[in-house]
Length: 100
Length: 242
Image: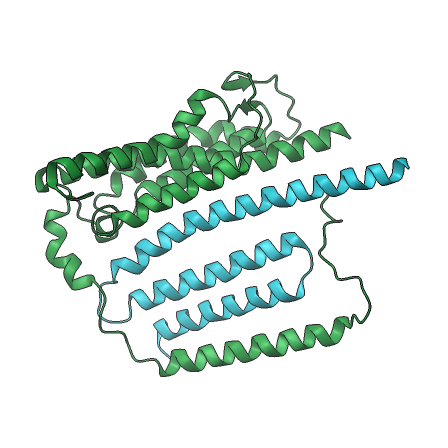
């Protein structure tokens, strides 16, 4: 088993862990974390593929991963904000139910 | 804190264990399939490395990744900045507030570790992100790394609660869009002078890339800081309210 294959298999494994977490966990925070782990797995796979032939890595997957990391961070922040908003709305609903 | 926002199915016919086993088995099957494909997959012979190596001398930079990001596939980067801006617009409060851009609140910080950390690390982060931006021309580095580092420093600063930025103020709005604005205006100017969107003239490619990257760094940092510190500020307000 060469190094590149090991990195690729690790990336696929991370993707599978994230997918499993996304399916079986019901908490939103865990779901967001799982999506991030899936993303990290894909980044790792891309980086491993970049060096598949030759000594010097192909720069295109690296550029894609760089772009992807920033977009993933932005998407996670958006999801967390929505989560906080959802929590607020549920708290408000509970409060109005208690008042009755 | 967020214990009550599960998306649990609470109706009839819930069998926790069997559904988990089904999920585990199907994900295991997917994993097995993917690993078999990886092992049998022959190395891909294409790739744009030969092209990049031939053309790197006219790209204005010497680092191939930066050359791809900001010269050969610059559309991706342009659209990425737009995506980032859209995410920020989705998060920003819809109500304008008239607070000043930056308020320094009286120090209400009990957590000495966070306070000391931001005091000592923030200046170093600022210097280091400037270095990363500059190093991007020839080594790993560039606008995204520098922007992300700067945003991390900003989040650390806002975590102490002694600084408060008003994200709807004019200055922050301009800071958020200036990266994209410089990018688009460079594209339009190059369209007029060169005939193609974002086709850099050979002699000015390096300078143009540096200008675009600097403004992009600034915008990325402000955008990421806005995205993350809006979460911090809402949770701070809540914990204080109780």
